Length: 242
Image (cartoon, rainbow, N blue to C red):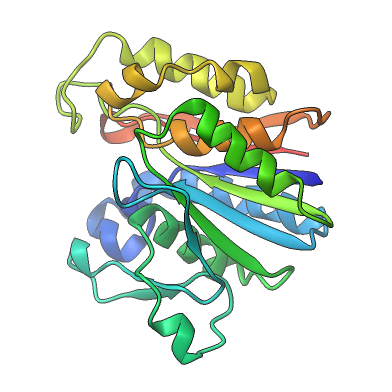
């Protein structure tokens, strides 16, 4: 049963060591993520499932056990993270490296000192159809016990001329609807997000958000929008459902 959700952006720039001099610009986003994780802890889940973008566009679901490792070396920073408490077993250390989004999630959990429930990760590719994403979410929510989700992903990367995807006039309306749906816990609106348009707008969160939509079907969780902005021309949203 799904009991709580935290929705967080996952740009590597959230990690101060990666952001370097630009770190303070995302302080509000970091604070919102911390507050979102607090809502998860307060729900006393039996398991936390972290859902984020996969390494490959068509990949998914990719499973990552507790203790799976990730790093930010690809961003020029010699920093390693683990998905939840690292038990240090050889099996965990030989697992595939966490995708960047799940690595950011691991960093957020480590920063908050998460020890409230066992953790696992799921990566979903940006090209995965919405119904497949929803089915993954339904499977997660159907597990025994109280399940919480940490859902990672960014909105469009096309909000300004200097954005990674340049300016696209469709980006702001897409982000506004996604932010509204995430803040209102609107399952139907999330399920209806256009996968093709999301990919054109370089939205990394569409597939994880539609996993959330599947997991939340039939629940009565209420949403709260904690943060919404587009620094660097990329849309970032933080919200909670409880």
